[in-house]
Image 1 (cartoon, rainbow, N blue to C red):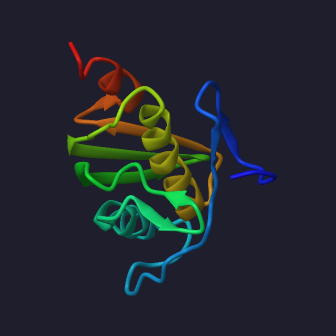
Image 2 (image 1 turned 60 degrees about the vertical axis):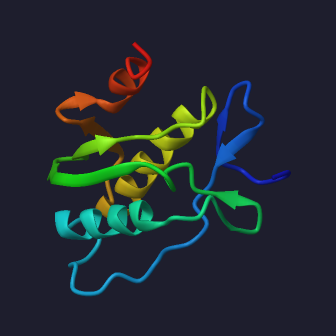
Length: 130
């Protein structure tokens, strides 16, 4: 998409953008770990790649589950289990950004640590082809 600000992915020609929020009932408020988990679950439950207006969800075919969310100081830590399914080099940073941005927005903090079975997701995804 042109003329929109977001997190740019070098070499991929796109950006990570926050389009909207989805209503989540019974999950607390921004800053509550249950709210973070509920927001991530909405993202992970999406089964369509295109989510409107040229926006996409790179997690649409991943099989991930939130196992734990904690907020300490200015950091939210999310531990996931399962399998991230990526279409390739450009999808990897998209997946990571979508998870991080969703956690950050719902936690109301500045730093997100996303773990996959206890390993930082960046490291876990870099080893998936090994």
